[in-house]
Length: 336
Ligand SMILES: C[S@@+](CC[C@H](N)C(=O)[O-])C[C@H]1O[C@@H](n2cnc3c(N)ncnc32)[C@H](O)[C@@H]1O
Image (cartoon, rainbow, N blue to C red):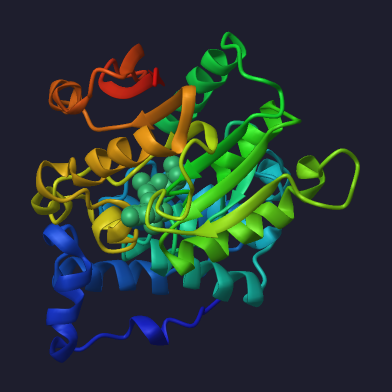
């Protein structure tokens, strides 16, 4: 089956770039050469054999969950659901399949996140378009959203309340909110054009869920804004946000999948990671109505510092932990 490995032909001259990309020495030059050899050996007869080679290659490159990665890449190229892969195991590998597979596998070997390679990922029961302009939605954020939904259901808000998802990224937090509350009006806010483009593609993907009273108009719109700057005072009932909250220095130390591929504007929360959160609090005090809710995610270890930032108008409804029992979010109510 000889696949096209031309883009992996490396010379010693290219070494510095390779070491920049493959952060932390996870793959050394000699090891990479070994991987190439293994790749060239992909003269497999069946899909299963090819996938087995891929698992070994990924494991040698230090990629976690190598089997899941290989199988998901395989099912993407076959355009089938992951669970149907076993039905294809004994099929012979075509030249096209082999070429496409190696291309995607090589991207993963250079630590590009699997989610970007696949082009979509799941958030609750949504399939979400993902791409390099927007943060990949995390499972912790699913919990934040579900807790927000509970808090809204037990509040006295009208069914047609107005909300903003601030720092929307792929848009999925806001889209999910609008799905849970079919009369709500939502705004997906981001400062990044790249993120807004991806959010727009997800808005289109879920447009049927988001129509307004059976009319053609959408209940959810995109807004380019520096946090809540574009909103007038006392306008919103609910603000939900997963803002950037990682300390600037810490961003550089994150795993290569994150630091080399995910947008730093989605991660970097400034000094102590709290600069954006503080600004969000100050702006929310103006833009929220009386009895409005602010739900936002934050990092482990930031809870006490955030509490010190709260003015007396905020009532804490919940200090939430995530499934790993780490400090993760606040639900606040504004009493004006
Ligand atoms: C941590 S990501 C969250 C993305 C998405 N809401 C999620 O949970 O997956 C933070 C988002 O905030 C956006 N952002 C950063 N600074 C901003 C600002 N000043 N105003 C608006 N959005 C901002 C980034 O572009 C990024 O999309």
